[in-house]
Image (cartoon, rainbow, N blue to C red; front, side, top):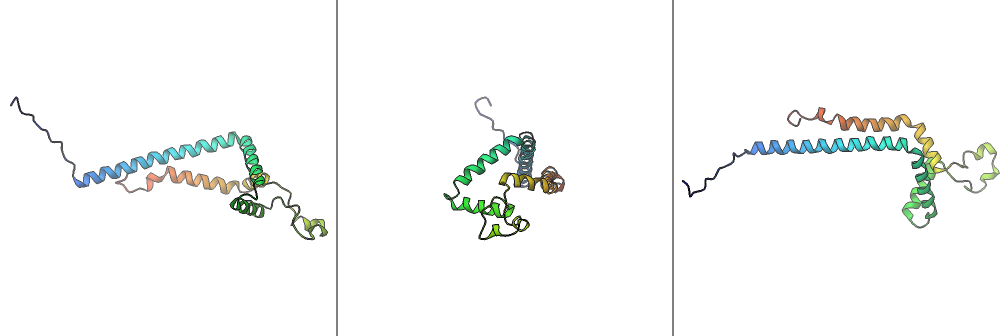
Length: 153
């Protein structure tokens, strides 16, 4: 009839269909964001390798500025103390009667290497472990779809 409007009803999706579409949507966006994070990590690694001298200079500047503010923040003080104890760095005035010992004995107590140099040495000594951790994380991110249930793929 010319004066009446016809209403068309859209086909309804059942309850199971809605949950299936919702699950597919979640898995899709999870995969997109995981891929984005993976490529950002990859780009960061490449840029860190290319600009390693600039990063070293920035790290030196950061450490020098924080050492100057050593007494201002107790958390910073604890962090610097931990790093110095863990990496055996910078303590030429390290205690009572240390310089009275023989030179070979002093080497176990007196440390003259800086934080950045020790960190670089640690990275070189543990390069396989550090690279293995990064490759493992990358593999987990890339291969996450293969371990998902068949409906989620």
